[in-house]
Image 1 (cartoon, one colour):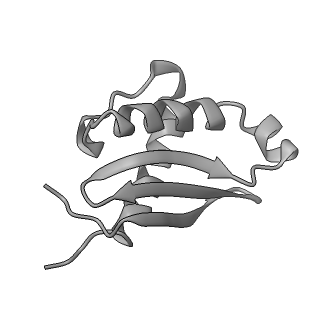
Image 2 (cartoon, rainbow, N blue to C red; image 1 turned 45 degrees about the horizontal axis):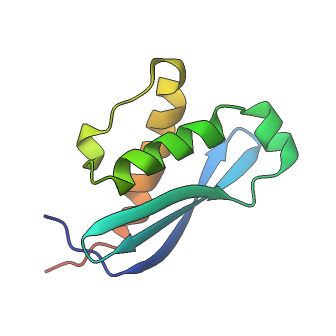
Length: 98
């Protein structure tokens, strides 16, 4: 089981000319939420699947589903894969190294 330093961790995902701010909130052994922060209207309009994809991943991870067992939606598989990569990179900041 992975142990985290509880807190709020952020990273940036680059999409062409846009940048998405990803926020992951964890406690010591659990991912509490994942969300996109400061998503501007233009980016939201250009990538309409981003917010629903992030919400779906957040609910699965908050329910205790490990990253490697997350179920990807057929309609937003690419988007969710992109977000999962961002989540993994963000969690690297939170992992307690022994």
